[in-house]
Amino acid sequence: MNKLFQIKDSIDKDKLQGIHDFSCKILETSGMRLINKEMLDGLEKKGCKIDRDKSVAFIPKSLIEDTLEDFRKQVDKAGRHLMINGGVAYDVGDRICAKFGAIAPRFYDWDSKKEREALEEDLVNSIKIGELLDEMCMVGCPMYVKEVYGKKIDPNFTPIVNAMLLAKHTKKLVNSEVNSKKQLKYLMEMGIVAKGSLKAYKKNPCFITAKESISPLLLDKDACEVLVELAKNGLPATMIPMPIMGASTPVTISGSVAVTNAEVIATMAAVRSVVPDAIVGGGSMASYMDMRGKGIKFNVMDAIKVDMTLCQLYEVLYGLDFGYGIYSSDSKVLCVEFLLERMYKILGSFFVRKFNYVIGQYDQGMVFSPELALAEIEMIKQLHELHSDFNIDDLDSDLLDCIKSVGHGGNFMAEMHTLNNFRDTFRSEILEEDFDAKTKFKKTDIFGRANAEYKELLKKSEYRIDSEREKEIDKIFKAAHKDIVGTDF
Image 1 (tube, rainbow, N blue to C red):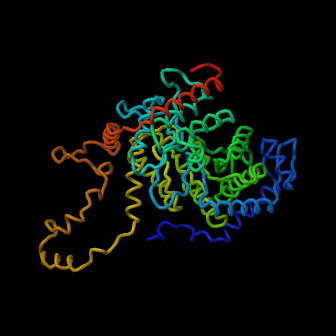
Image 2 (cartoon, rainbow, N blue to C red; image 1 turned 135 degrees about the horizontal axis):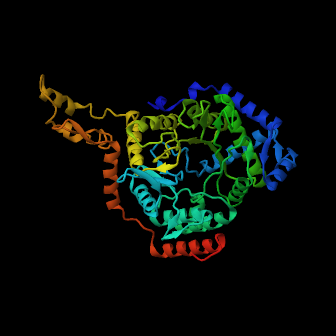
Image 3 (cartoon, rainbow, N blue to C red; image 1 turned 120 degrees about the vertical axis):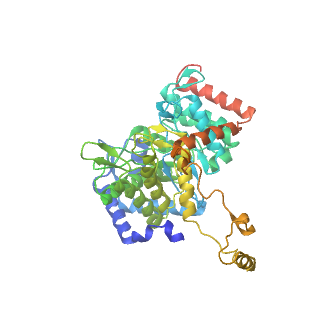
């Protein structure tokens, strides 16, 4: 059964080594542009040639391989490769560990059947759903809001708002966006309060996320600064490129993988040249430039294979975890057909054993739908059930007697064996057609049934942080607003 989870046997180690070698050649010949003096200074001390005018570091293969080896040993000693990011799935073991994470600006309102700006109530309700669902073990911020407590929010303050609402409504805290050193200070303070102590916070950090490159072989000033600051605070500094095949990377799978990998391993070397024991990581969210003038597409098989191949490169060759880009799909309309597109992304994550599925978003991550999230969870559960093992414990003398009792031409419907083993969850009610036998029409579709489940779940929502910690969160929130925005909230 375990073979069904694996694709690494189809990518031989020599091929992965060839990708690694080519990535190193890219960094030796083209280099990586890093808009950060600390990184450039650190790399220069490590023997890199630096073009100060262009902020480009030419990184030798020996430094890359030493960095990877030193970090792998650190991860082996720690027992896990810690990463925090909303849009990618990473190694969480064998259980389903779905999450909300990538931040969408819009919300799909099922009652009006329209997309609209996300409201505070939408965000809080979604966080509550994440807290309730057993298959959700990580609740980041699935969308952002422009108003909270009836007041408009300065965009620079949005990550603080997200963290505050998360802290108050769930224990399953994970990511929030981080765009500056100043934001990080207050996000860490909130995280420590929410987790109960600095030690608990450092063990399982929250309210941080990765930074990304978009242009080829370039990490901008803000991204560099945040990654260094995360590392200095002993927090995971994760680099998640968003390669666009045919635009920001070569159009072929191998070419795109090589360039994306070069960006990640260069960032690893740069961060660890400043903070030698930095916890670093990588992931990718690949897309494809449609040369027919249709823009970028995430749900193209080649793009999915780029993310899958990179996961295998890091697992097999480097002995490290790597984030599989799952949150983005291309459909502009929430419809049943969209679930087929979504399944391709889910399968890619499943095949590389990244069961940390990011759910609930469509239109390339621009819209969040709780109905979609609930439907995806049921799809994921069915997929895992299909590929799970089974036991033969009931093949005993009692079953043999039961079969003999039923005899030829009978049935097992009234037998105790059937009663004891029947599974009423064999198929989810959300995914099962709701058909009216009299009219010959279905009563509603998958998303309609998911909406009914969503409303029932909201009735069960009870968790809220205790009053003392809530007061501390509010105090940090107000101090952050005064410092970041310059006014009292």
